[in-house]
Length: 188
Image (cartoon, rainbow, N blue to C red; front, side, top):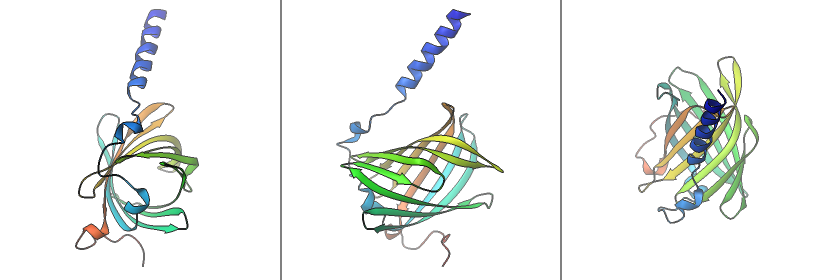
């Protein structure tokens, strides 16, 4: 019995150790992601949430009004889920050092910490996530990758008590790259 528990613990530690990406590995990747440049004006995103078994649980789209107020980047996000639910989150993001950021929003616990290198950005934060009539405190390990042509791909691992609940995947594109708005979620 002790042998099995020890083996299970060892395997868990090895798997956890293998899952940590290092932001510095992206230093030479192009195009360089400059957060304050990418998020200016309207930005659109399409996203999905898959549970830990790969089952699609939710689809959504997001319209973002992005702007600078002094040295703070404001991301005013309007969500529409495929089941008709709507939500809004306002991020306030400030640089703290070269290539480092902190972000705050109403449902974020404390401060989100971000590091940027090359074409990648990694955010780590805790959030009170609405689940039905309740909310769960979950942790996000959030990675964004700027691609040639201006598409920003976002993949986030969502965990509770260290166990992965699922993955969120989003694709962002700036309005100035489109002929017309694909949808309008922001009230006039």
